Image (cartoon, rainbow, N blue to C red; front, side, top):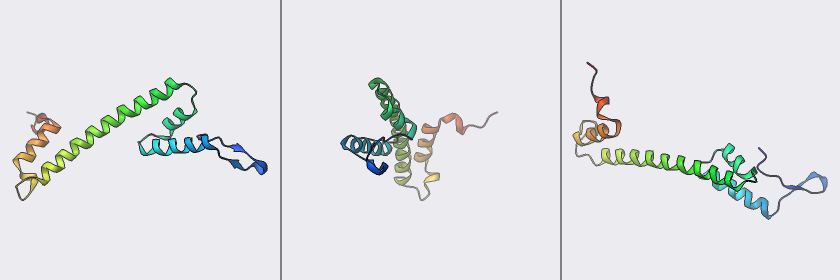
Amino acid sequence: MGLLTPARAEGDRRRYGPDDLFRVALILRAKEAGFGLDAIHEMVTTRDPEVRREVMRRQRADLVRRIARAQTSLTLIDGALNCDHRDFTTCPHFQQMLREQIGDDAFHTPE
């Protein structure tokens, strides 16, 4: 994908320097942070710092959305595990949590 452009030494061997090591570290951390290869490519190949910042802003917004969804899921799971009923699917507290998360309208049948 052109993410690395190491210098070439004799025999067409790649020669990696400190800048390449930094770039590899950036690529690995970006992947761990959820960046797609296209976003990583855009970020490391542009010479425009504002483009890099925009890539980071988009990734941050996506990460905030994913964290919010994960937190909602964790709350639902905790609610099921903390239910006093033998079967959490019949627990009124758990059912109320579902209504609040999904929307009360989803539980009504159309007339």
